Length: 233
Ligand code: MN3
Image (cartoon, rainbow, N blue to C red; front, side):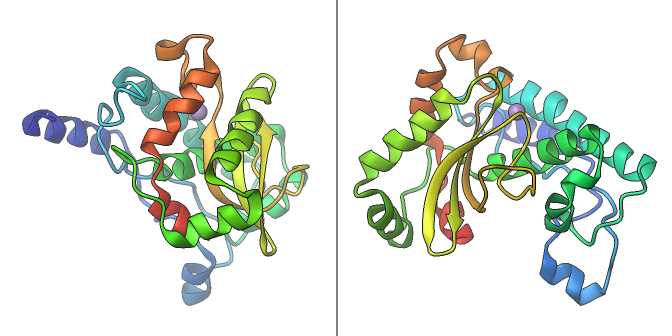
């Protein structure tokens, strides 16, 4: 990649973020004894819009990050204020998500899922650490069998939604959720701790792949950051 272009794109990606609050986790909250969920924030994209090409194109990344994801963050933050939502962190909000409006549910999911999804990817992908491959082999028999099952979950999710690899107790599971639901939500039929996510909304692939969702799913494997997956495990 052209260095100047990379810097320009990185600056652009940074410029559109409005990160004021770091990603929230239980440890941070325990340390500061904060009891209220304040606001969601959009992570700074850890790579430039064009750096996942040819697998995910620059224009899709740009629109996906600056329009779709930014809107979910803006909308959940409005809902947090208008519905006076007070949860100690994002996990707590998802555990109680049925108490709130569909606006809160859809946009909290949209805000969190995309932050997670961006981190699941990295230019050129990263090799799978043994910790991950051992867990996959133990649960699915082979890497190919795992990829096949994940691709099937992603391809057969009707309409818009997400495919997931999650940890549930000592097991790994593959499944999908509709719309912007995620496996942390109490309303979700499919639950667990997210390890890997794939956005299968048409906005995630249509510009480049049109109706060929299976091709997009196949391309995804080239940009997966397995080191990030290992950190979640
Ligand atoms: Mn999306």
